[in-house]
Amino acid sequence: MPFSVIFLTFVVLAGCGGEDATSGDSTASSEKGIKTFKISHVTQESHIWHKTAEKFSEELEELSDGKMNAEIYPAAQLGLEKDMIQQLETGSLDFGFLTNAYMSTRQESLNAWFMPFVFNDLEEAAEMRESDATRAMLDELSSQGLVGLDFIFAGNRHILLSEENVENAESLKGKKMRIIGSPAMQDFWDELEAGPTAMPLSEVYTSLQTGVIDGIDIDLDALVTEKYYENANYLTLTNHMTFPAVIVMGEQTLNSLTDEEETIVREAMEKAVDWGIEESIKREEENLEQLIELGVNVEELEQDDSFKEVADIIKDKYSNDSDTIKQFLEEASQ
Ligand code: BEZ
Image (cartoon, rainbow, N blue to C red; front, side, top):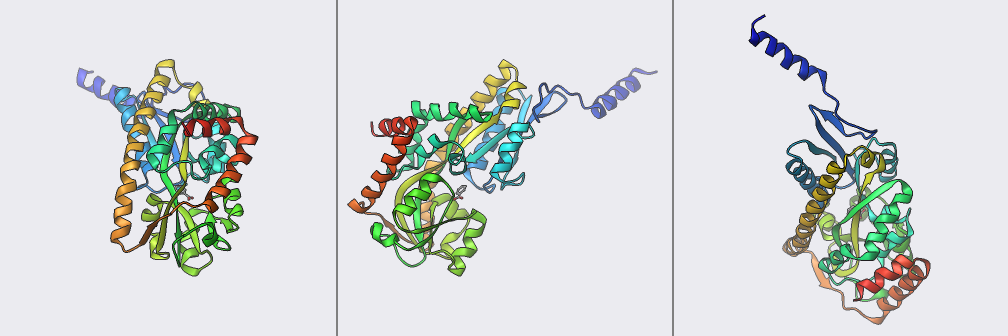
């Protein structure tokens, strides 16, 4: 048989065979020795969490000389966050960018990020990424079979109302507010005597339009990308909380990696998150400019004792219950 025929036959067979170089039980598919990890999250493709996941894939490819990359499933395509946790446990998903809000229902210390009025802007919040308390929160996730890698931020939360800006805590009494379900957020809004209703982001646009709710607490990126300003035009910049996602890897995925691969994965994630945080900080300003141009009535909240009282109640309650939250607040105040 001529050499060219033997060579062609080999190439065709190798292409069809699908070499399997994946070790362990992780879902990372492997074609021709390339590991492709699955990442899932709940936001749209334009959101900074998605962009950070894309950056992670790029960094993975570069650091591994093309031997690793990631496939990203946005907008809850693989299911809601509770489903994502199950998939991470069984190894059918490798990485999740999970809202800290959802995860705070599963791990108390994560409520630290929702202690009210701790950060004046996103930059201050992002500095806490390096704190000991933050590291402790990530380590604690191992009790759920998850490897806590890092935190990425959507932005700080502000208040959007359909009829007026917020002047003080009194302005929120009796308002029907959409919140994302989380113990600390629920307590904060209960303490304000607003009527907090937990609902998914996908229902917010119509609920504002039909008056089912009077307002929302939201980050500027979601406000712009989801166009909520079309149905509610009064934005008060409150910075009352920050809004992170916790980035986790499934233990099965970790167990499938060699030491060298694990080092690459961790380095790629750190680089991606460093980039993502800088981008989110830039986006805060760009989004605000865009909202002003769009004619949204933007005002900055003037802090007064009414909010401080509520914030102190929440901070006392949670730091009494969790040493990690107490430590987080101490570190944040330094
Ligand atoms: C929310 O439900 O409020 C939300 C979720 C993910 C990113 C931003 C906002």
